[in-house]
Image: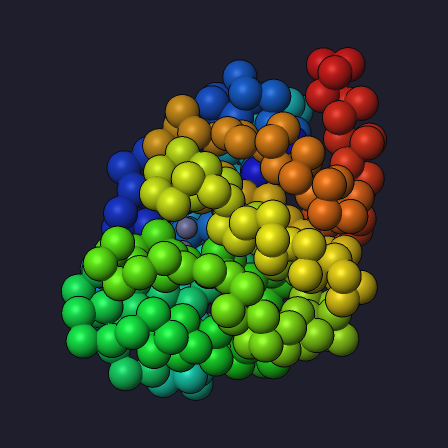
Length: 273
Ligand SMILES: [Zn+2]
Ligand SMILES: [Zn+2]
């Protein structure tokens, strides 16, 4: 398993030290882990101003020293993106090196997207169309290796707002995926949705099938773990889903460079360990 979305104490919403997650990853049979803490430039967010890159690198070096013979440990980041903070994001990425960078949209240009209150005076269309516009803008920057949880608002939409149906947003998703295919940007299958609301991965199979039908084949998988027990969770199910949708490989990264590894190979290796 290549778990490419795990948080540490460098994220304001996570109390799990990197060392503890490394131990859990080895126990779970994870071969590669990318620690992707929140890089936040949105002043309203609890993570704003929290992250310390130098400290993060120190912790990473310590973890590599202790666990590097059993686990590949990658320097990652989950960089929050929207067009309102674009200049800050660009500046940050120009100055900081990583192996792998996720671009995630958590906010709209004009306010919070990720909390149920946001839906109060808005229709699902208002929320999702604005969200997908930001995701598209994130892809178009070319700054990110993978795009995180591309239908995140479905986690937070209250049932009163009506049912989210991804087919309704086919045009937006098609535009996003065409950009991804052209720019060779991966997107993430975030397995956290399997263990909490909405009880499907983000995105779900229907969206992955659309991506595949447009010629897409570049995905990463991440558990989005904030606690050690969920590292590597939901990966077997995700392999099944990807293969059913016509995606047969997963992306891995070193120093921002992608390599594709076949799912059949990942399954073979996990059986032999
Ligand atoms: Zn996120
Ligand atoms: Zn995350």
